[in-house]
Image 1 (spheres, helix red, strand yellow):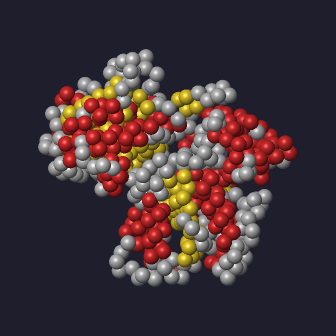
Image 2 (image 1 turned 30 degrees about the vertical axis):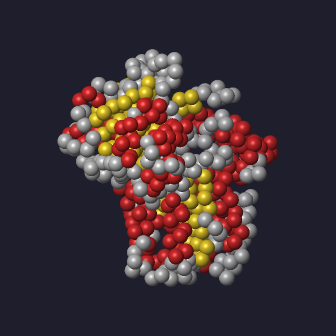
Image 3 (image 1 turned 135 degrees about the vertical axis):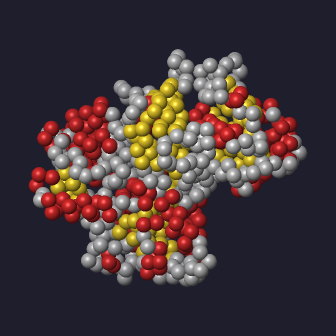
Length: 595
């Protein structure tokens, strides 16, 4: 903690996949450019009772699932909802909230909105209005978050009574690196022991949840001549419990070709690449890389493989960081342009549309790349974050294993010589029997605990995963509640997942939509309309809960429209759209969708 606490605003984040943590760390760096020394914690890692004594708290909060708080702020949120909390708990606290979300979801930024209302009800004083950062914006979540930072800093600069040493934002200022690299051959045994103690005592609760699982089987489940390569991957699972709808978070690693691209761009010798070191924090606010990814001593080769997300799409902050390092005038000017938040079209054309990776950017700026000090790599490269997949197996039917259904992501982009690839899906597709993978099981967002109701499950593609888990579990436990499955894919012989299993489940009716097996395309919402009498009767009798899973975009909209039409045609309500909205609020209609 800095010697002068008046220069130390508190930043708390709630993050499920790491996005909010990344944004919070970025905010810390920005505030340091204003001569402040923020403290950074996950919401649950800060002592809750101490919040009321904080003069300024800045929150960065993602929304998990269907409007839920992220897992690393649920404990603190429960405490904040306590009826025993004084109504003036935040009377001495100024606050601001950046809510991170996706407006394609009905529960858009619910977590941030709920937190905002609760703090106001406890007499908190807002610095700026709640900032809603939308991933659907053409420039992504960056747009809203950058506006939040700038608006917030503008107001903080007016609070000289709290922050007497604050200065206007200076984006040209170069801060010290977050970490000092301490090479193993240059430090004595006593220092190593002290470093290891410090590294071990700061592991957060969420990091302890990660375990290693061994691959038992990796099989392709789409036809060999089908364009989509989808894998059913089976892991040995002897210890971790899970329920239908739960999620497995997978920690991927980089491939050798993209690592080599970065090595070709950087000025790193083989000796430096494999020289063991520890990381030492340069300031108390700094968070060490997650322990489940990186253990010490480590090497740059390990960091390039396991830690640095060099396949990701760079942010404007990435270009700003490179511009401060560059001494090549032409490259420096171009980097400044790409890092300028007023240069919208340029950034879209160079980065967003082609989905250009960090590794490819380094290749495009050869002079600057060779100037990057090794310690700066930890400042400019984001961490690889775990990716979430619905568990496809049932603990009751598959007691010592865990299965995940993964569609390999690979596509072309105009003006790019090589295909764009999804890091995690391709990492998993290449796994072999015996390989170990870092996994964390998270509670799912779908509430299947609705006894007495017929469950209508509507899905496309790999969205079948949570419903296969549910149906297998219900069958194994001889659950009497019926399940109706509407499943859409391209072809009966191409990508009809688990087609041999469905006849074995007596409690399940399966309705299929094979969109490419006939001249006229048929989708799941068409098959729903074909079953208007069944669905209308169930809705009218209040005996049904709907669950929808698959890619976001048109499919969820078509399902909502089909339900609206069925409700109105069945005489259930004149305003079917309003009725569907009420079903969602009651969680009788739940969505789990993704890009």
